[in-house]
Length: 241
Image 1 (cartoon, one colour):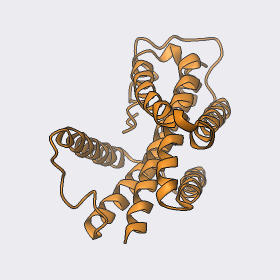
Image 2: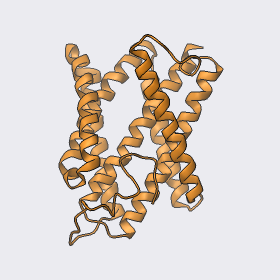
Image 3: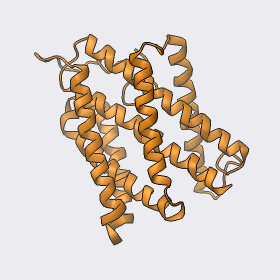
């Protein structure tokens, strides 16, 4: 099983640190836990967006750094998923709320649009996947893995060069190239949801341990957060024109 989601790697259900349990992972259980994580993230996001006041900026930074650390730990300690997955959702929610507040101050209504587009994309792709219209082949997975890795490299270079006052031209602007780049990234992020659905289905079929429902839900949340942020970025570029 191959997926470009760094949380849901191809060896997630077979790596040595996975401990077998008497009760297996199920798709229904993963869906339930995914909704729990989404609810935690949304409540935390609403707090930093509306109720944090002067603490908005510090909580956003804490959420960004803390969420990254928890995600890295979870990738290596899957057995901690029942405890750390909700913690990740909380921290990521604080981060998303702060970022959303910044966008909302500049672009009225953009947050609501981004949320609707994110969940609309999620449910549309889920329906298409369940209908059997999309079944990712190995070549599809390889291509998406390469594309996702390429985007990660571009963003990493952007961050590193930013420390030296250097910006990568065009792709982060609101011109046609910049908008086209964002459209491509949104499509790639959305297609990662298909791989996540497939990965979760295969994990349930393999009767993976029950605690991996939390881990799989965490991996799905990672993709949704990425998709939401990319949609926000795309909408902001369109608003600037």
